[in-house]
Amino acid sequence: MIAYFTAYLKAHYPVQFMAALLTEDMGSQDKTIKNIAECKEMDIPILPPDINESQVDFAVVGESIRFGLAAVKNVGFKAVEAIVHERERKGPFVSLRDFCKRVDKSKVNKRVLEGLIQCGAFDFTGVFRSRLFASLNDAIAFGGISEDPNQLNMFDLFLSKEEEDSSFEPIDIDEWTDDEKLRKEKESLGFYITGHPLDRFADVIKQFTTTTTQDLAAVKDKSIVKLAGLINTMRIKRTRKGEKMAIMNVEDKKGFTEVVVFPDVFARCVTLLNDDRPLLITGDAEVSDNTVKIRAQDVVALETVQQKTINSIVIPVSQEGVDRSSLMKLKDLIFRYPGECQLKFRVNLDGNNKTTVATHNRYSIMPEENLIKEIESLVGAKVICEV
Image 1 (tube, helix red, strand yellow):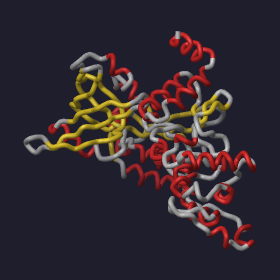
Image 2: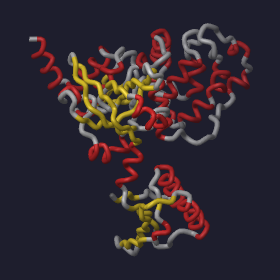
Image 3: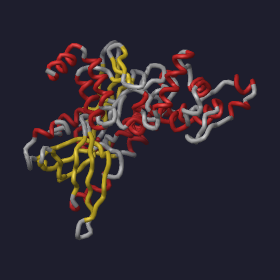
Image 4: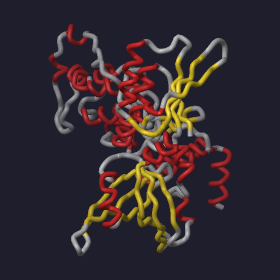
């Protein structure tokens, strides 16, 4: 009977059902990641925390689900309660400065603010997260918020009227890169919300992987699997011979699995295991007691796999072309990344007509992500990768 009602609620009230499920499983990182993945499969948008919309728990907002403030690391219930209470008492917050001035200083400290900015809770301001984060000390000084979570700051008692009314301008710096934003979301929430580091490798993952962490339960013992993921945690151990090996907790967009890297593979791939880069892991599945782990045979960076699949890079340019200065910069840039990938230019002619011009082999490149980003920044257009 319970199973029937559960299925009924999920079918007829999917957004409400998933919001309740996310709240129920809030304390489990693994379950939350699986629930978020299921929401995306159901076309239910998951919105990041917002200090003006979020409640304590996950909440329904139209046809979407808004993250609860209680899900943010280092933001305790008392801080959430203080934020919601002030919002209900005097209306929405209009800026970071307004927030710092109004909230209960005994319950909201610098660590709370850092987590809220990193996860996107102040995105409604339209100010880059990087600028809000860099300006946090100034906002704290204005609002009198303590940097010490165990100590009150009485600075606000001594503000002059001029200081109180002075405008607060965030520090003018570039926004964090997409990877930085995602990494900081993960730091503050324990998982990714606005995107995932694996998203940009979707085509490569589709072509080269054989499973996800969710589908591992169906694989047979000792079968060869290929999984794309990121290292969540890693423990280095030594064998009886003193050789290093690793036991890793690897995550993808569906969940987690354990990957064991024995000394021979560890020695070969150790440089790939020390940063946040997305990986393609090949290994054999070990099934026991309803759990599955992978014994790694090979580990490569997904970016390397992607580079090998790209045959040519196409740079779109207008009929007027690129000015000489930009062209010289482009030439210097290309020579910094020599490789075997052909470089082409696609020129927009009159109307919808276009022509593609292939360059000489001496201009062939290595299609690394940094190069592509620099080209796009230089020419002001999105580069096309042909496979």
